[in-house]
Image (cartoon, rainbow, N blue to C red; front, side):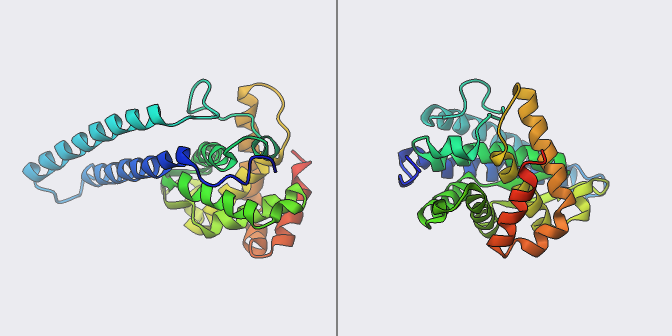
Length: 244
């Protein structure tokens, strides 16, 4: 894998900062949602002070985020940084600092997948994603085919809990899954999406991911059974990548 043996370089230094900012925003959002509950017995003066503090945290996060964005070279962000890019695992393997590129693409993909699957809050760690990718590359998994790499990546991403602290509304489909199950479903969808060849425009790229999410949701029981067995997980990826 050309370029994939690089260690986490200085570009990766921005990833812990971005993760910290997401944790800050997540905490602020969770705190605000608690204050917004109509039955919460919070005295008015305390509520007012708390809301002011949350607004200050929001403004601070925005300013720090602006600095971080200026320092970070976003390989896949030639336009709108929130858009999904048409990058496959094979594409990423041939880019320098591949673990950083993978982490950035996977963050966006997982965020989109989780939203489609019904999670309205949660944390996705780019740092843990980059570390997982690097571990798989250095483990020798690349000596196998792309499905073996996919299976190893999924196991590593699940083990490192790159998706956590998920919340869903009581009427949403995600509420019927535990956090661990939802993490496995979203990660399988992500990796399956990375395996499929890209065709069409930007809208097709996102539609493809959502299709992968629907397939992964239908395979939830299979994922629970096979996630610990890399060979059986590999066969699951191989069986479905050509069906999309």
